[in-house]
Image (cartoon, rainbow, N blue to C red; front, side):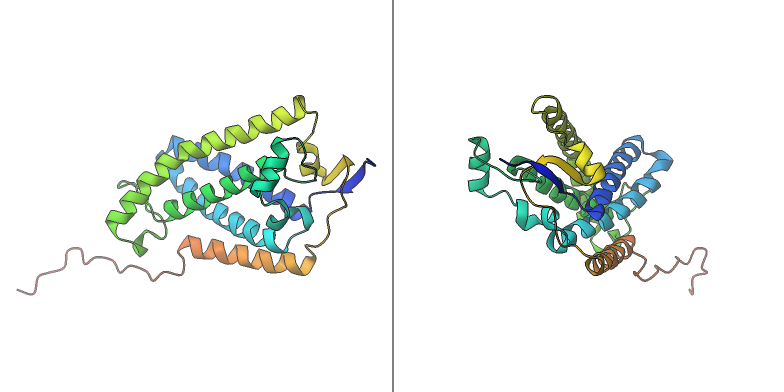
Length: 229
């Protein structure tokens, strides 16, 4: 095989990866500590909503190896990988399962968090869109899945360490520089500037929607109002 240096990860994908990592860590820390940090937890959740919207759309119009169609983990790909016959660049089939699992889990966490409440000091920005009973249920789901999220992130880190130390595949360097040495494929194509502008606009729209700023203001209760009778 003729190995060469290829451009693997485009800049938007790399920025998304590191921003999402920092945001998830911050969300977990602020959520676990609670108290006054719960407001920051909510704001970080809104940011994650925008990042996820960006990645979902970029997974369709982005460059080669960022597109979901390129690394979607079909049963045939998984079987080939487990038997040692899979060849390719970017996410391998098991890595792709982890990526899709993390995106789905984060989407559920974001939606449940936006609709949640803690009966004390925090109410999700979109909680008024659902009944109190449903909001309480989603709050429980949000707390329960937070442990699953921590476990999945830990598994992701372990997998990266395994590939680096055991298989001698450095997965971090290409996600920093964008380039991969000793590759067998072609450099990524697509994901131009116009596509990036459109996706950024969609991500900003998602942040605005998640913030609840578009909802009508709840009128203040008539405290101290004199009864007409």
